[in-house]
Image (cartoon, rainbow, N blue to C red; front, side, top):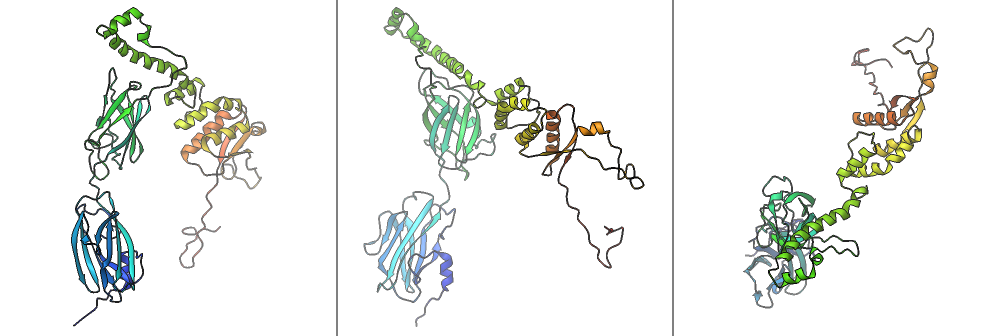
Length: 452
């Protein structure tokens, strides 16, 4: 008695992308193609089957796992580093492959090559699946960006949600910096800022010792899968920045000492050199601060607190909450804005600068009174005299504003307009009237429908 296993071809197509023809298929794959969070000690199982019932040949069968040959039917079966079992049945065979050592990475690639005994059909297909992440995040790079900023990068996404959490990469308490020489300042991390999902910037309370080699040690930080950092990949060496100095500067305290004192120190205890080295570190930082003073005078490089001082010194009349970029822009154009005060182009330019909206100006007009038709306070109001109206204007805005935008535009126009003119109102697009049409038997005149 014999029978054949029939499985619809569409079922196979849904299981794996076949790279070698329509006859030979892989079924019952475990793990499945593109499956995620697979256990790290998983075995690899699949069933190879010829749909027309021809026998597959193990002699023509090879299986690669992570690029390594795991099984070769023509060369002794399972290869070094792999074990498992093979059972032949139903015009095919079932594999169960076990990798002796750990997988090389999170993504596992499986390639299967086989053919029928008469070589009438063959298969060469590849699929992948992803293992669960149980690896601790490792530091891959530490580099000093400025004398007070150091960038740290991991090989995996790390927690960056709560700077007060003990497992978070944004928590300054998770970082320790150890000097690898002397004399050296060992600063504490004052704050941590996210650069991307794998990288953060550490800002220190003071400058690191220039040119000193430090070791950064990270504790408690976890990746997004909950794996905490472990030694030795939680530590790395880096060299602190040595700021550029003006050409020709020679400010070495030890070389300033008399030659006889330096000679006595070299052949004596060496205490003077050690003492002056400590003072030299302070002097280097002082010289760096002096060299950096010009940076705070440039709106493009000054820290944000100095931008606020620049705007205050220029008498900034705009009490708006601005981003750091907008503050730098405003410092550069504020004097030009003062020069355009009292002009229509000036008003339009400032509105465009702060709000990105192009406005227009129209003379103020009021509805005229018609004897026998107009009603005071209803369809006509008492307007100003002609002399006042001659200098009155409206602002035509092409977009509907929020309350905050409306208040900001009003403040700008009132500050920039000529003193003798009168800003009356903002003209914004109106919402089209929604007309409820009459429905016979349903609408009531004056209740649910009005004549219009």
